[in-house]
Length: 414
Image: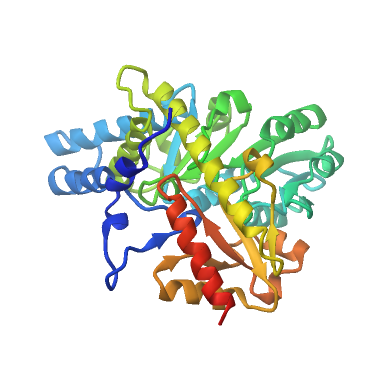
């Protein structure tokens, strides 16, 4: 079964607009997706009718309490968590990583070690490096296999030992689209250490279903604005860790999970949008008779199938250009090992010049380093402008890819 792409696109106002007489093309999804009308309506509806803080004895405050619970239940279904007590909300994934790095590192001692990777966005590297520096803890970094920008799991295994306290690991690269074999990676971690496993699923979440129970991870975080929702970070943590760790919080706040991890007034309108975003994803399955978790799994199966076809089409077209180098999985037969996010360079041309040309034609792509500092250092891309990044979401079409390649031809013929 495949979703109706026309029906999907009709739900996104951004995809219906005209800019100087042309319909814009959004291949900037890895930096933040477009948003369906249902998410916008949910956010406006909450702010317009129920804007209140928690704990009041009146209707709008009680509505906010209900909303918090609905948002936790939506996150439970999205992550397949066991309980709403395992769900923590924050401004974004980066802030949550800094929050938990402070709490987790309180138990580290000199001589301990942690592991980060060269594939990660540095929101899942810098918080741990800074915490390690404060505690006198050694940081090891897993390299990538340069041929396809996959994570070198043999190198990961060689770095683990009895002193390893934490492994911070991405689920998929926000730059190259490379998907990490998480099952194998976590088996390696468990077999060779007692380290906590902190997963960054920010780039992964729009493209594949998440199951924290099957993954056997300790923590996992994503950002809703990457999967058709508002700017909001959502973290899963094992119950025993959330209970044992000490949060930095305001003294009068109740010392009860999960709220003790959520400092200050929460972004309630974003929570309303998050619930709507999860409902949108579930709706793609086309069935209202199944549980929301099952509908989400069915939707992600359809998203994967469609996006792999987009990937195969893009890779087939791109390989015809002898002057373009792709970073990441390059063969259509391995589309299951990547998201439809593509990083490349054109010989002798600055990536910024490419994105500016496409921007003039209202086709939105990115250029730069995308905070993947370790990756660019290893690949030697730091001082030469990084790469051009083209990222598809399930609302993109083959016709839009044709537009991209037509413009690419025009650019190269200049």
